[in-house]
Image: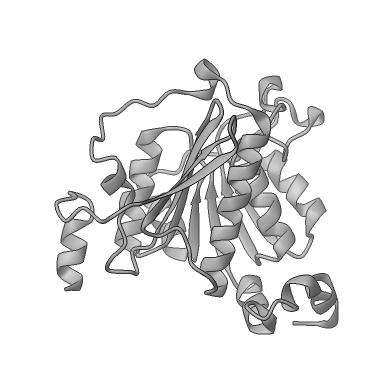
Length: 253
């Protein structure tokens, strides 16, 4: 870490839980963010600002005017641009020392395998169950921690799945039915600051995993009701019969 980095990240280095070793781990880390919408925007901005050395951001969608209400990594000048490219430009303006790879195409299974195997943490900012289940399976296979969240209307949920831990549930332990269809923000709406809150928590969970500090949401489900501004933390146990992770745990044993 050079003097410029020591000054830039001094407020984090001053934290005894982080220190120089934790900050160096952040600088050396590689994080994959899938989805550069409402959740991916604040998550990526805080991770870049905190000094994550290599961000890989993936989104094949394009910015439209309805995104601007909550997807704060994009601006009016980005309308029509790919979200990955738009986000890359914004993140570079936040931290020019962070390497940013922008993937503006849908990752196929081989691409997803490669990117997840290279990542220290995967941040799930997608908006559909199909993508979430695919991320879960690949993260299990590669033993890569997954920070997953969803937000709609005034409600949100968040958890961290860490396949390096034998007691960790996986996303399918939470949703065993892969045929489930979720409501969408386009149909139901979403309050803008809610995704900012949730994406910021995803960034915090990611940094805790990288720096190995604190207690993550592994084994817990955080529920947020923004109307009443209530937060609930519920136990989320591993399902021994889960079809996605039961064999992995059996092999670990």
